[in-house]
Image (cartoon, rainbow, N blue to C red; front, top):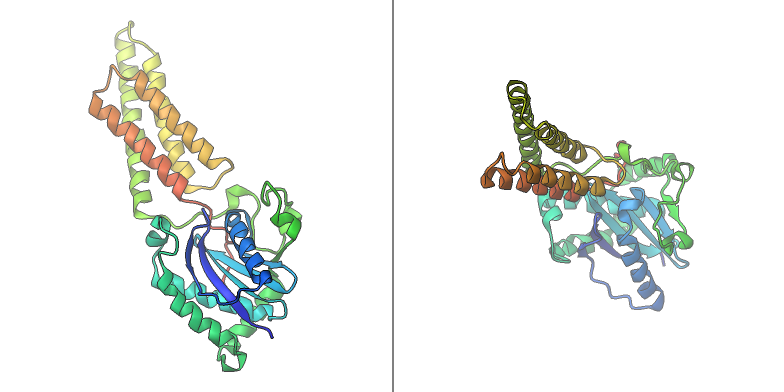
Length: 308
């Protein structure tokens, strides 16, 4: 009998389970698939936005959008178009019910467990296709799947130690995953992120102004140290680069952010004689806050044209 067995909602960046259906199936095959669920949850940020894993008698399907992934387990003969329509309904309801601020700041597993009620109701509907009244949506999804089929994950890839980073651009063609990081979309900007961006610009502007003042002082007094000018301009460049890292997805983004914050700390240590403790504390704190926001704003794992 073809049917949906379970579903879960997982945060993409760290695999934190946000909600899940209550499962009653205890067979060995289903228990093994739950292990695959956990493995996939840890690799969602490296995967295309729509995937399928065939595990013999069962299939695992999932879609990712806005930093959240919607996963489901079904029997191998369950129609793919129904499976992805089911996931699409979960996605729309979850986005409507919970804002991104709550999902991004959640720290407890299954903190949205009440969403299980909607999962169960939707699962019952999709396990009885005759009761479905979404024929137009089904037709649209069928067309979408033909144009851009889900990426087929192999068992060997699932067990790889370095995730899916070895896949080539040709293997990702048609899956909706843009393999090069600079073109990948980031999660929607949050209020703390906007604040950190503005404060970084402010720190950069303050460093730039002080740098020009240092140049004027150097021209008027030949005994002034030119290294202070360099420190101010390096501080400006570091603040502006933090703004760039917050806005765009690049390779080694988190490492670059950490090194940039280190440069800000070094510049302020060197400028210790020219700034009071409050000024030093402000610049270093803003640098740390911006580095944190860069770390929290992760790639969406979805393509720009994903309109299911």
